[in-house]
Image (cartoon, rainbow, N blue to C red; front, side, top):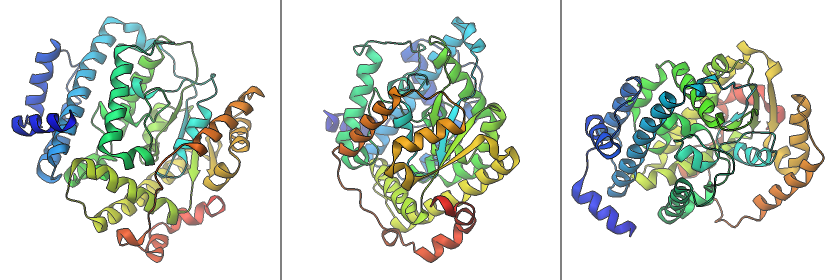
Length: 394
């Protein structure tokens, strides 16, 4: 079935260009209210960079065409929801919790643990894939969007079992909120998935606050049909735009995870290589290594600058080794630091989640600095400020 789809998309080769995609989406949905044109520049720069620089494979063209069609359909639906239900913009977003840090430092594990507390509003993967109409509590599993999300997860597992093993996708589980930014076509992590240097250069000069204004509107959408609860969110990419995040969410509580870069960096390289293999056959380990090291250095420089300006009180640091060794104690310490209510019943849920994660069957994730033409000395030199500031946690 998947091979047939690839053949069809290869024969038709629908263009990955903004006007053609917009015309197609409007024709398919019968909608045309985009709520403004702010998204157009990011989309055009990204698609142009992909077209000229990403060297997509046949499979990559198919995957990205479906990806951007879905996002544009969603965006039309979101704007229709906002017009039909103006009270969405009155939803208060109070003291959200953001888990961030370098990729591969335990952010997903910690997020999955804390998502077991029903006092938090987490975003499930199906909601992030298909946010319109606004999700509601107790949505039945036979909902069309959930069924489609499960099919999506199934095919990702078929296309790239290794990716699924490194970062398992589950339609019903809490997932990182970076997928919100996909709908505004603003995310620096794109350059870890495919070569888009022109887009990254443009993105680094962009007003990142605009993407967080959109992010907050989406949280209001996600919270519209739910009782008031603090959101529990996570995405490593927040580190790069921490100043914009804190500007839009001045009462945000930040949990920053840490791990020895000599372990986190090659793991990120392996993840990047695996993701790239889905969309391109032009894989260069040395280029991947260089890009991932640069990514961590830029992330830290930006995040540390924002942290110094904001003050230490809203930050709590978590050591990856402590999290793995004693996940329950780690979560308890976070709750205590932010003066959050911790019920004894949560202990059992956390222990069950930790056991589930530990017993999850997956392929061994093997990697090394040398695979990506990196070495310990260069890594330590490039990330020396991070290592100096957070040596206690790594």
